[in-house]
Length: 290
Ligand code: GUN
Image (cartoon, rainbow, N blue to C red; front, side):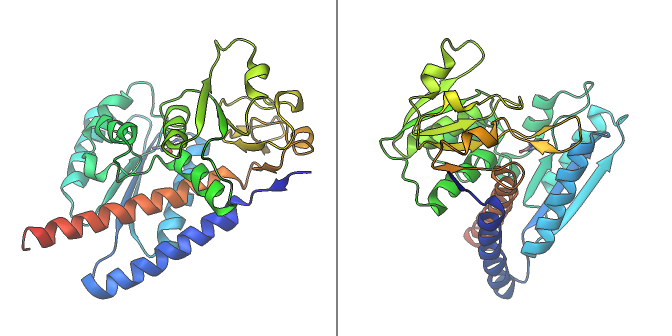
């Protein structure tokens, strides 16, 4: 029977470290990190995520601003708000919650955020730096997975890691972070042939496809570590991941539950990025003699 990986516990551990560091920095500088979160439209899951991000800011002692804009907001209005926040020295991170309404182009919006305030690490310049392994901002969800592995002393070096899903937000950066830690990485996707043959090779299997019950016990090697990045809603309204938890937990050595696995980690990584952005800003202003 697998050991359950407790994302809430690890997330709290990280947020406590951030909170302590923020308090010390505040005593030194008189200021705190600031995060602005923008939500456009009525997506109910997005409203929950945005509320949780605001609560995490309060917990860590950050300054936060949240903008909940109507579905009818134009792209120009959104870009104007981002421009104002780019120029606001109290704001170190700007996060525009995805998905955006269809009439707004997400790439244009992401590109409008100053790379030094792009705490999602979605901007092409930050994505490129992740590829090179020289990055300040962590890709939040994959970095959260890496922190879970570290906390549970699960060594990645030399292991067979299989990532299911090739999205820009999770699959691709996940593969990069595992590769930076010397794993042998395979990325699977909808065109992968004989998927189960590939996934059964995995010492560490990461699934991010967005389909409930996608990973079944026959796809998992005995003793594998199974990380479930999926967040799906069942017909009864309850959350579930991409992994058939009940059958897979009997075979795996470690497994993340949904909810309470990877999800809480994403937010603590966002807090980490906001703190990093703040510290870089303070350093820049010291270098400029301000
Ligand atoms: N929507 C779902 N996950 C994310 C995320 O990590 N960042 C943003 N901006 N939107 C999301």
